[in-house]
Length: 122
Image 1 (tube, one colour):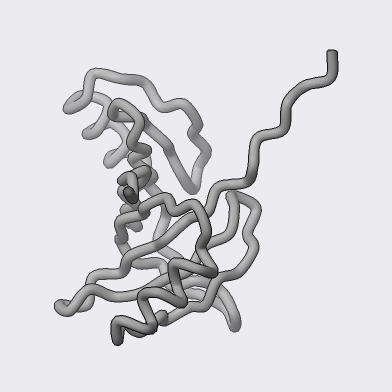
Image 2: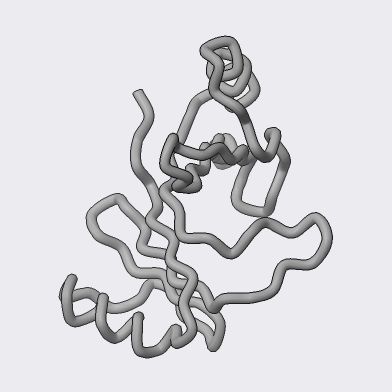
C-alpha cells in the first residue's frame, strides 16, 4: 500500500502561504526558512517552496503529491509494465530515492523510497 506523505506547493510568497496553513491547520511549521516551510497534518507533510526557474537536471517546481513505496525500482518496473510512463527515473536525493510520473490530466506524482532507518548501537 502506498501512503500519501507529502503535498508540495510551489508559491510566490512562502510566508503568506505558511501563515495560511498555520491558521487553517492550527499548527506551527516544523521547519521554515525564507524559501520554504514545512507543516504537518497528521503524518502528511505540507511542503511550501518558493517558485524557481530550474537549472539543467533540476526537478520542475510543480505542485505535486508524494507517496511512499517500499521498492521504488521494482514499483517503477511494475508501473512501466502496466503502460504508465515514468517521467523521471528513480534517482537518489537527500530525502531518499524518488521517481516522478504524471496522472492522465498532467498532475505530477512523486514516488519516494525513504532511506532505511538504522538502529542505534547499544
